[in-house]
Image (cartoon, rainbow, N blue to C red; front, side):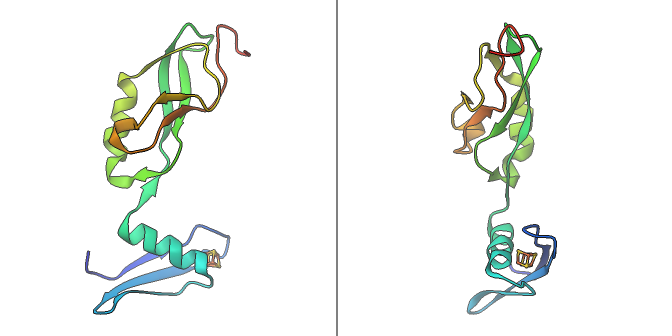
Length: 124
Ligand code: SF4
């Protein structure tokens, strides 16, 4: 990528507009009031990532679907494919919050984990 880009830092309510410019000496960052804004903008410029949240079908549970998320942010370019893959997953109750439902989900290097306890009754 070789063009200037601007990002709104989401790390605090100040919402600095942070600019990343490519140059012969590498990337330069301006507009940030603190180091966190620089780190955020460089990450967004070079390798934007997001935590994917959603639900999957679960068998033997009090609810038809289990809420899940990736345990770390995954590349933004993988989000669409990974979201579609949620529809092919079938978990089996009982499930504990934090339990890995799919390791290395969609080849992202992140695990898909449950975000609540769920069994035949709502509480385990
Ligand atoms: S750069 Fe620092 S001060 Fe500005 S919004 Fe981000 S965290 Fe807040």
